Length: 158
Image (cartoon, rainbow, N blue to C red; front, side):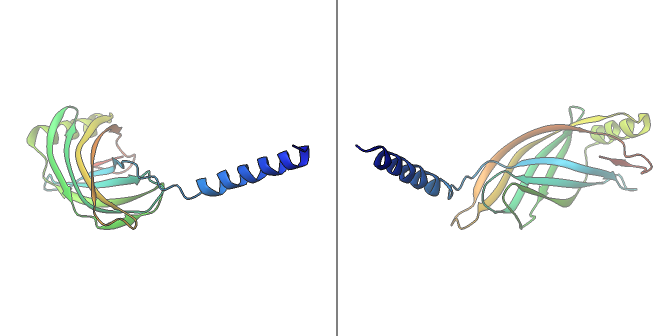
């Protein structure tokens, strides 16, 4: 075969391979995190929950059911129906109010009073509908992180 013909065939094959790979639709499990936890005067918490979509397509987040624990103390169940669409590889925040268990309230109060960090865990399910899909998918999540008292903001952990 002539060298120019070989080079042309190789270039065509590479072009075909690159043009086909551009339409990959990847649906990945989302992650959850507490962006901010604010303690209300009545002891309830306002949790600003960050939902991160790692997929290459938009996802509509319909329901969130998470068991929350702080410093290994069960705080209760965080339930939300955000009904928001989050673009590919993006995140958004929803506010959810919850009534925490007694020991979790004490753990948060102790962290705020001592100006120390507070570990937390979110474990449960997130139901999301991938863009152009016909039925929602349920994703198991088990995320851990920590919060710190926000300087100048009483009763706020970030």
